[in-house]
Image 1: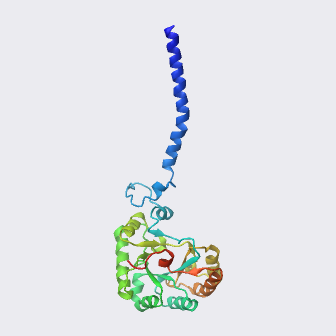
Image 2 (image 1 turned 180 degrees about the horizontal axis):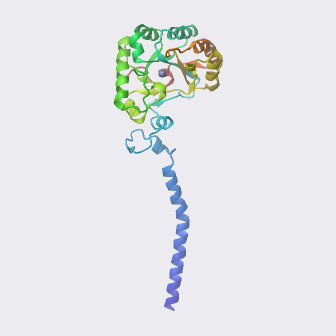
Image 3 (image 1 turned 45 degrees about the vertical axis):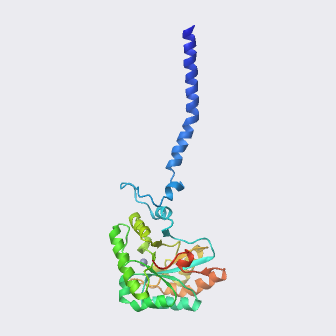
Length: 275
Ligand SMILES: [Zn+2]
């Protein structure tokens, strides 16, 4: 008789255990899936976390922008504002013509200065500043930084910053890394030292020497509220930026017609131009 009761107890215990397992396993596995999901804001936005293991795969630019969203920008808030940005200045072949076009349209923009060019053409940097545009830092030698060290990045930024400060009286807060390329260590340095890294979300591709029509199309097709547009007002040997210069008046008038206001990057991003 007692052996039969024992068998029943074992059987009932087994059923209870299996039932508990049946309900718990999906819960536990969904918890694990949640914790591992990369869109979890608790993981993505932990800007202060320095716990990335040395062996982890380096974060790509999109991941860096999400993780360091206060430091690394590529667009503004969704308001009817657009920021025009011009890289690789100063260049006597193209910068004065871009400045003339902007002056005629009454538009202020942001120019990213390369240190070694600023040393060569200091008057042009002063002219950009005197005409009411904002100056940002585009490194000294236009190096691709992704595979370089934090100290190489730091040296290039500080060297250029000093040249710019001597010419226009402020040390730029805004950095645009050449090719938009940076690594996590460099973004951390920028954050710690009060810089804002600014890429773009509309690429004119004007550096390819495109005609005015193509440059205009590239911009107008992609532009929207809060866009940051990449163009160039300087280039390498043999570059032709006449397309971007001719496209500017039409780009500006079309967008003004659609109710957009042109802002500098500090205006669009609600920040300041200087450190
Ligand atoms: Zn550049």
